[in-house]
Structure formats: structure tokens, C-alpha cells
Image 1 (tube, rainbow, N blue to C red):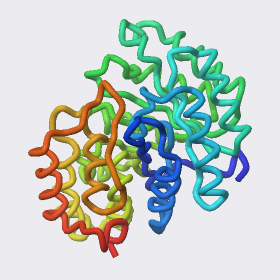
Image 2 (cartoon, helix red, strand yellow):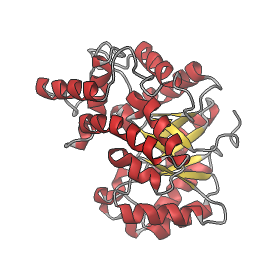
Image 3 (cartoon, rainbow, N blue to C red):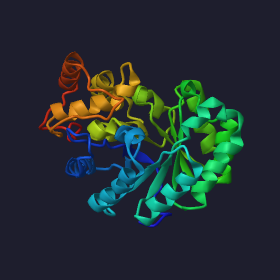
Image 4 (cartoon, rainbow, N blue to C red):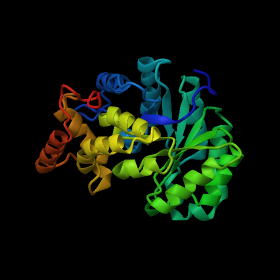
Length: 319
């Protein structure tokens, strides 16, 4: 797939990264996980090396290997969107170049965590960071807009300037966490001379977010419920509120399973759900993440039952 062929819109699940009992990457399980997600009809791509994959705990070599493995599994059938997660703008450029060399179809660009110390007051910092990426790759970029609470979100003026300055930014993954600003960003990004898509990652209130006019979603929950996400997105796009609400009722128990506090355990919980649903043999996470308690795993099990998810219909529950 050529660099200009991928348009980031629709449903893009973010995959998990399986580890074995020694906390090494379990490549065979990773391949199976990618195949499971790719089996869902009408997904628009799969994001790798993101929060769902515990990218904070992956080495650069492991992230590079994930790109190679993902392309080997998915080929040209499902686009691969590679996360660019690093504190170093120089390293970000290298990561982008590597992803393009190995055939990735797009990039998901994270803000450097260092910018929590006031980066929003220095827009030239993130401009330089993105420039280092675009100087080394012409792949389509999905820019990650973090929540207000993280102190890593870009002011609207900075967000719009980035999109205007760097035309390879083709979408914003929006997790701003504020409905008012979420809607404003959607409207203003769509109103640019070269409109930029908005992919919501407000997975805890997905129906409401999509109804505001998002062009798709990019969510770790897609590692478990990609089929339901596709069905919900289609219903919203078709203005079929009754169907959308019915699908949302099926999604809601998974929200309670994955997105209750503390949020940092959300992808940890998704791994446990895949064990419960027979799609993973074990659930291991790298420290500082820790395995959920037995009572929380039982809660996840009950939520899967409430959602109507079983080993027989997982990834097919919306059929």
C-alpha cells in the first residue's frame, strides 16, 4: 500500500502485546491476536505500538519487531498504523523512517511525556517534534490529542497549526475528555482548507462521541470488541439511532469491565477478557502494571457474560 493510499477513518482497533510468563514478547500469540482482529469485517486498520500494546514497557527493538511481524501477518490486506512513542524527537524521526521502510501504512504520533511540564506553553516544541517525523517519513499521521487531565493536550490553536503546517497529518485521535471541546475540535478540524479526520478514543462514551460527527474511532477495546465497534459506527453513520442504542447496550458491560478506575489497568483487563473468552492462553503484563485481583477478574468474567460475549462468538458478536 502506497504512503498516500491510506486514509485514516473508520474503525481502527489498537492491538495488545502478549507476553509469556518470563515477560518476554510472545510472538506466536501476537500473530494469533493480529489474525483474530483482522478477521473482523470492515475494520480500517490495526494500530500497533500504542497504549494497548504497553508501548511504555517495550524496547525500541521490540517496537521495530512488532512492525515487521504485523506486516508479515497482515500484508496489504489490513493497514498497519505504527505508534511513534518516545521522549526524543530525534528518535521519533528514526522510528518513523523505520516504520515506513518496513511497510507500515501510517503513524500514530504521541506527544513526548516530558511536555507535561508546560509544553502547551511552547508550541514550537511539538512543531519541531512533528517536523523531525515528517522530515523522515511521508506516511499519513494520526496525531494523538491527549486528555486535558494529562497536561499533554495541545491547545486548539496549536492543534490547528500542526494540521495546517504538516499536510501528512490526516487524522486526530481525540481523547480530550471534554464534550464541549471534543465537538469544537471536530468542527474546526473538518473546517480546515484540507479537512482532517477525527477518530474518537472516548471509548467509555463511544456512542455520544460518534454522534458528534467523528470520522471513526481508534480504541484498545477493539482488541476484544472490534465487531461491535464496527456495527456501532455503521449505525451512527446511517443515522439509525435505534440500532446504535441497541449495540451500545451490548458494549456497555465491556465499558464497565475495561474503563472503571484506575484507568491505567484498562488494557490489563482486556488481556484478562481474552483469556476468559478463550483467545489468549495467559495474561501477563510488565511492571509497573500488575495482574488484577481475583475479584476483579471475576467482575470481568461477569461483564463478558452481561455483554453476551462467549468463546464461540467473540469477534463475531455483532453478526
